[in-house]
Length: 82
Length: 219
Ligand SMILES: [Zn+2]
Image 1 (cartoon, chains in turn yellow, purple):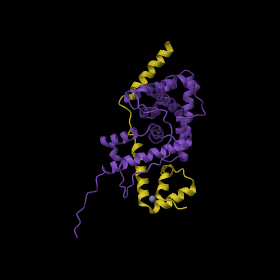
Image 2 (cartoon, rainbow over the protein chains, first blue to last red):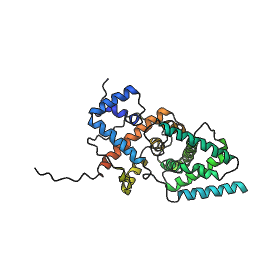
Image 3 (tube, protein in one colour):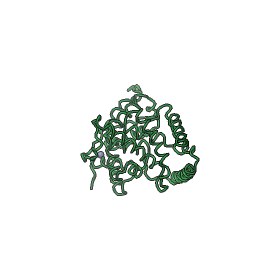
């Protein structure tokens, strides 16, 4: 079976996670080797995941940690004395 | 981040961490409650991010995250060592966020019960000649805003899977466990979320990369 572009798009996510079974992965790879469109789709998706996975993209609000641990301390005290 | 199969060294690291966590938990339960601070420190960001992605409002998310940590503290004796502490903690956070959404459901248009994965395919943005977006771009405020907005705009069932897997970096199996859904559901939703983000973000980000300075060519 020869995969067309739409078939390949169906497998982009699992390809990126390296969780496709071997035979299918090879098929996808063969297509990617000569298809500019699918390579660009793959690269752009991978790149976007690098950006969304960057700690700076989603960061904790300032003072989050201090407020959390203060509240935990308060509640621990309360449960100790309550 | 993208590989599900951990390398041997990372696997050993994970096992070591789990061993240390079990010891911490045992000591906390034996009365050294202050160690709870240490136990949760590595997971502050993950818990906050999944809760924020679900309730969307920053103040509400912070309160929900605090509640989740408190609940984890009071329920700690019920934690079973065969589970991973982080997955257990995140599932508590997910439940806290879900119950808040349920409480405010009447005011919202987004439905929690809309849990059907519709099977229409998501097509990516078709580009040729993809120019890589350098990760320093994330330092720019407007780039972070574009990324955050795109994730926030995903339908809820895709958003929660995406955040656990690609922001909090849980494995596919852990994501399934934390959300109490099946592994195939995680894979389908993750796939759709990733393609939706590609379709939304690739053209926008592409426009933000400065084209290389044109060299003057003299023929
Ligand atoms: Zn193709």
